[in-house]
Length: 269
Image (cartoon, rainbow, N blue to C red; front, side, top):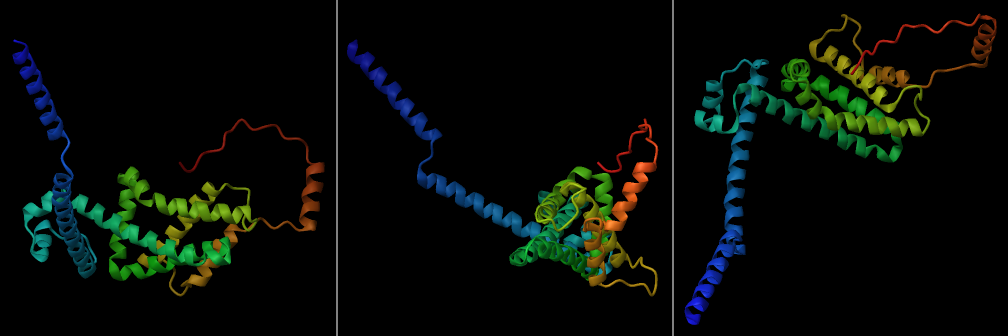
């Protein structure tokens, strides 16, 4: 009877060992699984990249994004089934195309900023602004008009997605402006975050003028002039001794004003 109990215990132990081995694959099994997953991921990325490249071709050719999914399928030589394996629909494809283009846009500017790092923070800021403006102007040849329109609609209709895509851009500009402010090169009456909002809005507006040709005829602006405009807006307010004396005199004569109950409006989020 003791022998039978021992045999039962040994069998239970063997079962436990087998179960443990089943839950923890050996190294060769892990390598096999990883190899298969890596192959599948590579295939998925290749197909999705092909769809994006084809969509960009169609946008560049027509200057519009009104192509059909069937046109995309025919041009890419892939199946409709493959398309829906990678994208939920055309809107998701356009978002991926926009995200891809924006990522390349930001990375190119980041490289230019890094190249100017040896010349100080103001040189980095100039590289950022010039990189933004020059690329926005030249982007018309590669679907920039469509992407600019999509940029506006995305900001209004899907603000969370818009903010996430442009977050690296915002952080880079805030970092540069913080460095300039610490060095005493720009105004300090506004925070770096506030300056980022103002400067970025200015750059976007100037870029849209270039992409949509919204400027007054005969009043074209060069990149040098646009950078000078941005730089001047960031400069500390100039206070001459005469102006300081005038302000002091007016302040001494003017009666004390009651505090206004009116609260200032918040114009931005």
